[in-house]
Length: 260
Image (tube, rainbow, N blue to C red; front, side):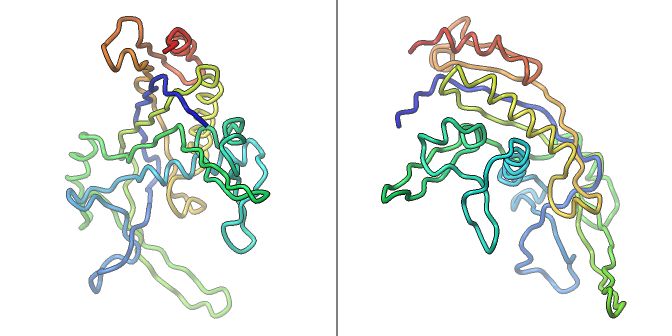
């Protein structure tokens, strides 16, 4: 399947932690006495960040449930997710068209992959949050300890543990990139991206969400559409902006006029 690229829509903003957030990292090479469950950090700056894969995966999972897609792809014992088996089906699917699909052999025919139209960048702390978190005195760099105690319901034995969290109030820079391949799909795809973000705001990012972790808010900044003509030559009239994801007609118009 040939997929033309008409341009890009860049969605920027901030994601703010309304409660402490934990996205876990590997415990390999942890020192004795170290925290039980550390957060993922940039290996160079040591700042905590939100992997784009974590946010994108959560967005997709919630959207699949909201749109009542049929789980068809086994990923483990008694667990299935929704993934279209070929590109021809994926382009008609409200979820796979945005988030992508991996092909699967069907009726002795190899299924074709459908790479995602949506790119979710890793989210890093804003400069203000970096400065504010540098000043907190928790014994950890940019983060806090959360002490918990799991009680065995049968023996009443205690199992204390320490979980590292990004504190409430921390803000991360959000950037989503949408590849425009068909102007006719923009409005619906933007509405579904917005729906996924709204669902995340009422759910959780990271682990332990049922215990209060990971509540977030998202504030949109710039939503900008740029055609290939603009990216190539800064052609006048080939860039447009919007303030919300459910009002992007101005952006759609520049891609309807780009017949390259």
